[in-house]
Image 1 (spheres, helix red, strand yellow):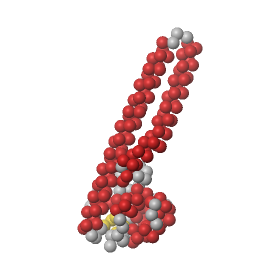
Image 2 (cartoon, helix red, strand yellow):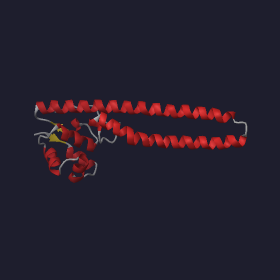
Image 3 (cartoon, one colour):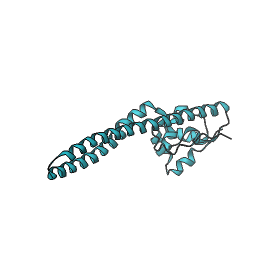
Length: 174
């Protein structure tokens, strides 16, 4: 029998078995099986780990079957790899987007500095600040809605993981 940490992780997040089952898109009976240490599919483990915001190997304290241990470790390593790729890709997209906004606003600022009338400069300055704020808001919306959906499809093992910063390294089962 496998020693599962799902119950502890679930309780730390103040979730009932029903809540976790809803978030992981599995049945309550499946959650009960995992908590009891019974065998479940890799897909189910992926869904539960994503709902709890941990890697697959963090769901277990120990695994008796060597084959299952290898399977869990491989899935966990693939999940961590996808998390790192996703973080890097999201960083690159953010950096590029901020660069584009900065580039456009720099040209607009240069235009403002050439306007002869001070009154028009003040008006254009207010418009510049408004464009800056709206650009940041639009970028945040665009990244959270469209880019996140794209990255969910590209990196399916990362779907549902709330924070990509707190992923721990693989641990050996004892």
